[in-house]
Amino acid sequence: MSQIEPLPHIAATKPYVPGGKLHGAKGPVAMLASNENPFGPSPKAVAAAQAAAGTVHVYPDPDYGPLRAAIAAAKGIADVSRVVTSAGSDEIIHLLTQCYAGPGDEVLFTEHAFSMYRVSAGAHGATSVTVPETDMTAGVNAILGAVSPRTKLLFLANPNNPTGTMLSVDDLKALQDALPPHVLFVVDGAYSEYLGPTYEAELRDLVDRRDNTVMMRTFSKIYGLAAMRLGWAYMPAGIAAIYQRIRGPFNVSSIAAAAGIACVGDEDFLKMSRDHNTHWRAVMTDALSAMGLPTPPSHANFIVTEFGSAEWAAAANQHLKDNDILVRAISGYGLPTKLRISVGSAEDNQRFLDAMKAFTASR
Ligand SMILES: Cc1ncc(COP(=O)(O)O)c(C=O)c1O
Image (cartoon, rainbow, N blue to C red; front, side):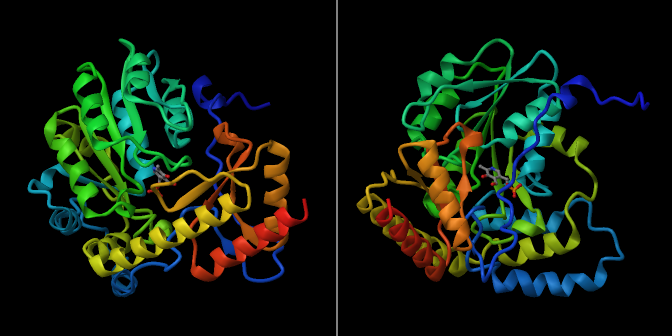
């Protein structure tokens, strides 16, 4: 029998559960499970990726200079050396955890936080500590109350996935000011573009206020490049230098880098995607609430609907699957009575609402 055993903390780590695919569908599937952009990628990204495909026999530029410069220019960042890139922002979560937290250390996040924070803490032997939430939000005092001398990292997605809730920028500043100096504050802005450029700039400026704050971002959501696996972060200089030390030299493919350069400043595409999301998020929120399914305001590209019981949420999920509509069960996030529904194309959103109308009418 094999005596090859993983490290105990690896063996104890539960893997991330992705939104998945709907197998055995009868027709086209409405994909409302993974917060992807229903418009697909920006055409500029597609053209650049196709052009880059002919040179994949050559390793990428390990410095990713043009990509980092394009990100810095689009986001109003003066110091390119503080912009780092990654294979999806999941990699940033992993690398920061690898750099700053290990056995005996604590990684802090809120009760219904994005689950990769827990996976990554476990994978590096650190202890996950969760802050209890009320109405799917943890306030500044609750978060500070959970900080201990062992806390090394605080991950906070703002807006958060899967709840769609967020803290105000003033709250983020208060948190940043009050954290003890041994805690690195990682603000995950995966959905920040859905609030618009003003909020994006506020997150950027947060990093410049103190040397304890990192902002991480992804091209997987509004940029429509989920399968490219491209992320970036803006960091204090010292943290960026540590990150660059252990980052794989070619962690971003040249195709992904070319796509990112082409679309990071595509403001027309961003605005179109954001406007569509704002419109349909309100339509879906109102329609579900009118069906007797409470759906609080969300700040991201998805909504979270309350069904009153785990059984009813599961029945709704099954009804949707039977109609080739895939949404996200979030019982794994401690929210078994709710479903998370991404804002999709107009057609898919309408299909979803029609299916929900039929479901609620049949109860
Ligand atoms: C809050 C948050 N952070 C990070 C990610 C990771 O995104 P990616 O690795 O595709 O960049 C996601 C993806 O769902 C997310 O919701």
